[in-house]
Length: 206
Ligand code: MG
Image 1 (cartoon, rainbow, N blue to C red):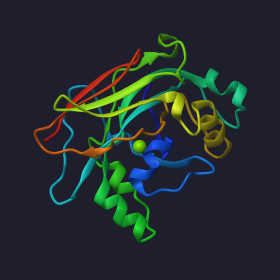
Image 2 (image 1 turned 90 degrees about the vertical axis):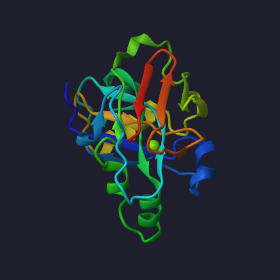
Image 3 (image 1 turned 180 degrees about the vertical axis):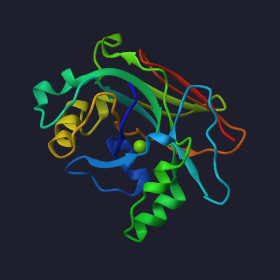
Image 4 (image 1 turned 120 degrees about the vertical axis):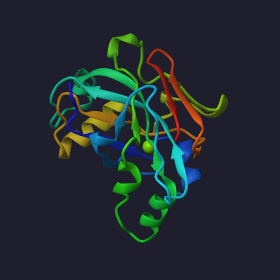
């Protein structure tokens, strides 16, 4: 099922707020990543020359199994069919510059190879998608760890909020935000993101 869109969620873990000088959001902060940015397990993340700092962000990706439009919190999770491990790769210097000048940060999130995704697993592979352990290592060193129980807006609330305004279609992906520990990637690095019960996503950086 090919996604029509990737919906990203910004600042969805309290612990990550301090790192990015963001304020506690009162509703989910939503952005889009193009599907052209998707790569798979083992594919290289390519950092273009001259873009400055590029960060990793391990995230739980949820994949819609059917169309969602105006769904309630109770119905929301019945629209999810699969889960995956995602890395919401971000050109941080470009994003900060855009934010500071009040401009969109689409390019900072949307470059080719900036959406590594593991092979999806069925939703029922996990007992509770709101109680999963995430971690990310660079060159074997632990950089990020967190639990999906610490999301500010849980997945059901994200789907309800997004689908109030934007139809989610079967195959669409929501990247649900990253916990603390974001950090820079450099050519030659190997990034390994892991979510217990969901999978492992390994990508070299070039
Ligand atoms: Mg993110």
